[in-house]
Image (cartoon, rainbow, N blue to C red):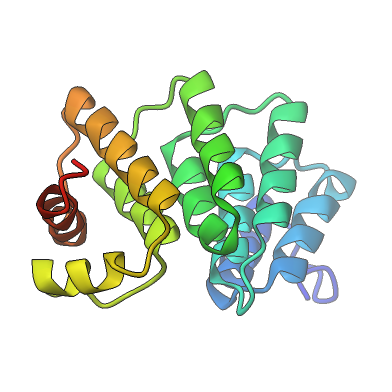
Length: 184
């Protein structure tokens, strides 16, 4: 689109990637990301984080494409930040637990400190997207969650506690539910 109207620029590429990301258009976001160097613009960490956001917002989230983008980002010498890992955590909501844990391990290797937005995204990926308005709602959801995911949630909450990370309301509800289940 931007090439067709002769408006190729770094801001135009950024805007197009962001727009595709918000729409969950993985192909659109990745296409612009891939084309940027041909126009003389090297993608930065924000461009990659936004493309990973497309993986999160897609009708069918793609953790494999999100991981590919993170790997590519590192390959070209860019450092992922908390925004990158937060988008990655959200994109992993359909991933097997071991893949989600591997993504968190990568974050630890990069020495990126979690924040409450990442923590909420990670918990949402562990338990699925739900409307949780109370501890009772959280308990209802957790009754159907496999034990290994419950133990991972407890581990990440311990890490958050050690790092002094504040909690969103959603995370507090899940944390209290896990405490009532004697897991946290």
